[in-house]
Length: 329
Image (tube, rainbow, N blue to C red; front, side, top):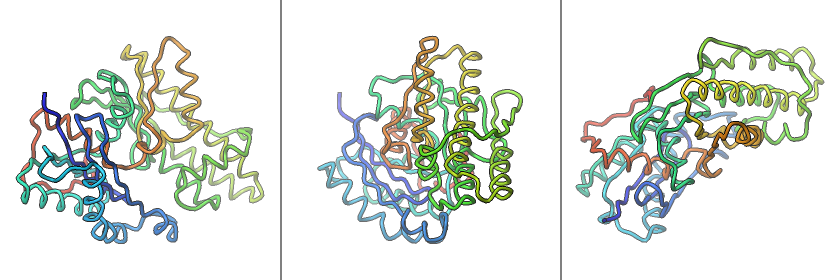
């Protein structure tokens, strides 16, 4: 059976990435140009700056991805690009570039949902992982519990009603003076502290999440007690977040009877959250999967993997494809 090579393009936020993936599982190249050092100066991603940097970087990144994969564009079977969700200007750069490549090469264009990409990152790390399974998607823009029925079929069981978990991490990090990117810095600071500060837990009906109240409580506490131990505050916040995520995941397991759990998204790189979910594996034969750390954050390999499953399903786009910044799963 002939191998299928998919070129993936990711430009939804502040990473310009192009990858080549074989049969949805084997990464031949995954080139990532990150803008973190640029946006650190501003305390967060500046959309206009992100877009301009994507324009500058996308062509050399694509050429490097083909070089590392040791192939030519003619060898590619399809071109998958993120068309949402994300920053509209950033998305448009990747979409326009993918459309131009598709037109020039005659290769099929595969519109790919960024959220599907995060889920598919697990297929690269675990070659034998197959649906059905549950995914806890935790990132800067999304917090969702998803039932993965098939490679291209999903059901959202629960989602955040306010802040995404990564957004809450970033906002707390900014207030306590850690800057951007907040998630990794909070993770490192929490390792130096003890989770000994009592914080509220917001409970909502069903499997939905709410992190706004917790975030506000931490920010108010920091303002009220300026000399509060920041490491302890970070550790307490992180512990509270992990407990909420695990509590809801257990509920989803009980409701669906599915005991395979895959974490996905940037916050799945958090060391404490990974540690607590690892403990969950000892309960009732629950299997927990995490993408490799380099596949947790935005990258094109995950887009190429998700694109592969859409390609073999026949989900091909035409050149009228546009960016959809608020795209849902």
